[in-house]
Length: 111
Length: 501
Image (tube, rainbow over all chains, first blue to last red; front, side):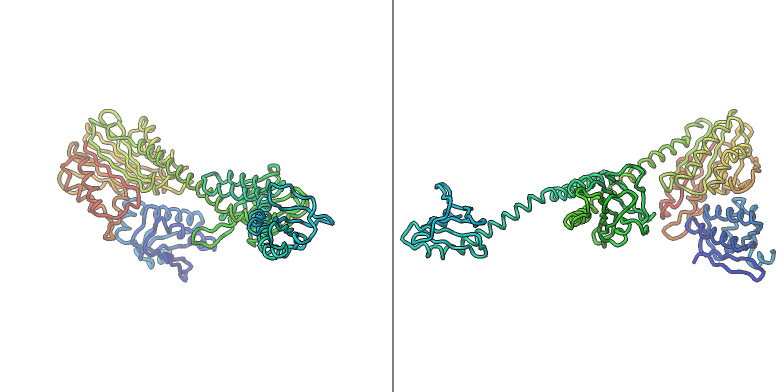
């Protein structure tokens, strides 16, 4: 399974991305978040602790998901980015578009 | 047969058939004048019924010393057998003649099997032949659309356009043709919208080599010429035809698909050539800058792009970018960027102003396609000894000096299409004739080699730094040579640009 979904007692949906976020599975992630929004979820943590690689279409999907969550009045946070991925977000200036935490626990604490 | 047999036995042999109360001569030796009535039985004449034929008699007139009865007893089994064989041959010949049209029909379909024709053309020929032989005024041939689960009409006879629906759902309980499709059996019934009389529908079957047979469509006939229901023979013939035409129709469909694919490939090749020509050659800035650039698309069309602009007073603009996808849609965005850059370069020379204008030109397209693009645009000003650049999320642009490590021309904003419209520019000194601009796209550094690892920007920059004193063309050669040795397959568009000015 590429994505694992769980729910924090405080009502935050945590989606863990395993392996890669690439063109082949980005739609699945968008669908997961879209379904959760339909069910009323508004707080999300996307945890990349088990993620090695995100390609350009994966980055696009994250921006698209972030936009949808904001439009629905919610908030999305990213966590667990490894050194390469952190560097990628900084280099592309995408770190200015997201709230990024070191770990899922830290991201949850901020809600 | 009677003449040689008579010679052998020493007798004249004739066959007579009793028709009502009269005998009619049905076979006799040729040549001699034939009697109008049989001779009466006597010493030289015998009269015997043929076995299994009570109405056919053999007249034996002895022309030798042997008694006619004796000759008759010996030859009557032989004559009986020969007569039966001849009668069977005659029956078969008559039947063959009667079935000539049907055989011709099947032959015509056989011919269609080996020819490359359009599906519609094959279907129209089949319908014309079948209705002609069976004698039906209306007929239709439909093929199943597996995706839509519908039977689509490909040929129709005897029905005005618009009366019969172009497609019928295979689940339609009221349609006789849908029933034939579902049950894989002959179906008959009334179709009140347009049929007078009975509608006969048979499934068209096809089995590819080594595969189970499947229904590929239906053949239906209605409005029988003689009125009433289709006879058993007619139904059998239509079924036989349906069995034969599956292959013809499938052949035609495969040929059509092949032709379409060939045309698409040809058009993609043309589009690829067009895209290559849209991107300028380094010749456009010859004399001002020494540039080498190489680009490869992962598909026929790619999302990487670059352009060079002469901006006056010796200044040169260099732009390199990557649309967040590849293929046709990415190529369209890339083409739009290059066209817009060409237009805006005449009015705006600062990099941030250029990106602002590009963003305005592309915002709607990027929004609707959910695509974005990373782009770095640098203006080189040798008179001032500096460059100014704006970089929208493109990580792979570097200054490689004559000595020392490469330094990144860091992005000044997120990619185009992902964030707002505020773009800024940076200005930095540049050692003209010495410093190299090295810009590339992620397809290069993300290429996974045979060892399972990505090529990476560190390795790429190491090659460039080792070769930095060589010409841009030689440096590009060295990087792609190293990439070839790294191995693996190209998963994304790849572009490398090296410039010394």
